[in-house]
Length: 196
Picture (spheres, rainbow, N blue to C red):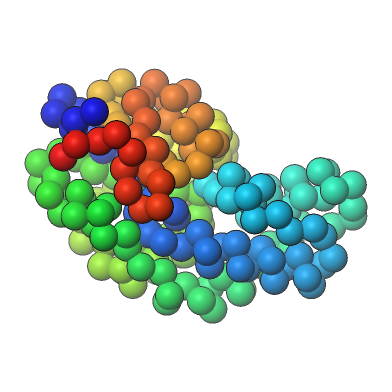
C-alpha cells in the first residue's frame, strides 16, 4: 500500500501515534486492584479507542459484578493523567506525519477526552501537525461506530472513501471500515504493509 491517491490521512492517537497504551493498561490494572475486578491486558488493549466509562460498563457486564462506572473511570483516569507525561510519539509514525504534513490533509480521531488528547499532543510535540482533532467529547457513538472518523473527514473537507485510517485495535479498524475508509494497522509503532 502507498499513500498516493489518498485525499486525507486519519490517525487514532493512543497506540497508533503515541506509545501511551502501556499507560492506559497500567491505569486499568490499578483500577482493577482498587475495585476488585479481573485485569486482562489483551482484553483491555483491544478496547483501546473506547471511552473509559463505556469500558467500565463492559467490565461490570462481562464479569457480572456491580461497579460504579463513574468511580472506576475517575480512578483509572487519575492514574493515567498522573503518568501522561511519559507518553512518547512512535518514531516511525512521527516520521510519516512530518513527511506528509502540508501535502495531504491529516486529522486525529480518538476515544480519549479532549483534555487528555490535547495534553498528549502538546507533550509529544504532535500538536503542530494536526488542525483537526476529534475526541470522545465530539461524538455520541464511539468506535467501533464510524462517527469519530466521519467527523474527521468532514472537518478536513474530504470524502471518507478517499481517506486512509491508521489504527492499532480491532474496534478502531471496524470504525474505519464502517466509515468506508481503507485501514492501515499499526503494530509496535509501525504501519504494516505500507511503503512511504
